[in-house]
Image: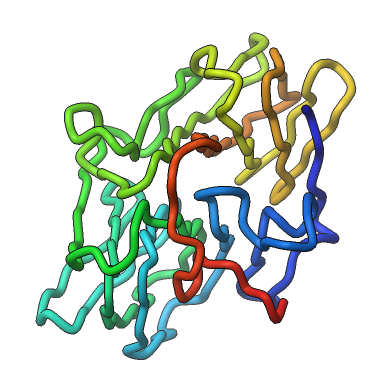
Length: 244
């Protein structure tokens, strides 16, 4: 399966573009298995997103520009930057606040946990470099031996910045029961010489071999989910938004 999602399917406002990936596949679920929601945000410095709750969401803050101060209900305070990612595992109930110190653009990624009411946890990952050039980088997974950012469901997240010199493929041959969502964060790509994706657009991939190229630099994020593995679909933001 190859299926494109274009920007017309997104919700949100001038600051945040919201993708519920399941909306393009079914009327029953706004998520795509464990992939609940992806926000692409561009917010000016000085804004404060005041203390608010999360329940049963795994939230990866993947910011490519700017500096954000995170403060939470456990009294913990830390900075998120392009080379310092944060995974917030909300569990039963967790509050946090974000202060945008510099103009920020990035993704807020809501992944469904494997089960409800896990113990809340915040994990930071310092990257050696902001971009992984022409090579897939695994940044979050369910395996603590492979990534410090350990998701609580069978979900894997990769990123890569590509240049025009070559054709690229997925990082590995995933099992047939795995589904993928290839998201273009910046730039544009052409998949299999025919499907064009620009900034904010994405492509569902399952049991397909693909290759892709770019005319200029492009930044990509790849989400992989095990469609046979359990997940909790009623999280506050990652869960099925039946009213949407």
